[in-house]
Image (cartoon, rainbow, N blue to C red; front, side, top):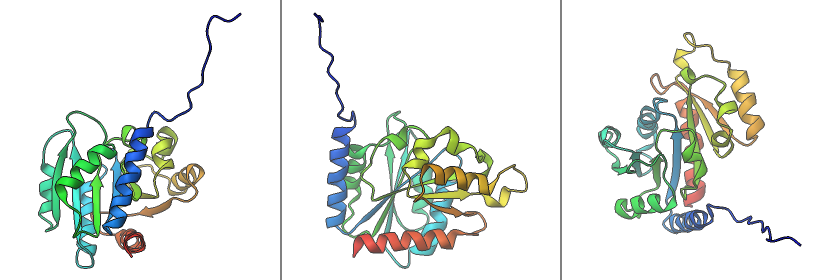
Length: 222
């Protein structure tokens, strides 16, 4: 006779966070506010891409940005200089945001008069992908200098994103980056992902990304 029983526990370890994320989304829907969770590795150009996005959309909708970093307020100041509402979230050493932390930011921020809020998550291709923040859509940025092999190395991040932005295409003459290979790798993980090739520096391709984002905001807020 066995001395003990083995019981399989199949509930997600993220169950509480998932419930809170659903609650955040329900609140945002009621307030007609769209929350975008924007992720990437450090140095991919998140803030530059955000500035280019804000420049194109700020006359059409009210925008706010929550900047998440382990420390510093450099990015929040850069976004505030564009004229939109911006706050800095310090994670106290944590490499991601969860739904509870996002809601704290929303409470402090206030979203009643905002159409679009962008959460610029902590620069990391691993931890942020594991936590539902309560965002309506997830997007990530992969920069050309990082290489076209990143979907192979960080599959979860590419699997959970509704949009993948390939940034810094103006540097392709310097780096060995295969457009077809990266698209194939992303689509294998996530057939529904929208992929945008852009240069936040020159503006190339940014309009297509902004058109997609505008469509998502309008559909959610109507």
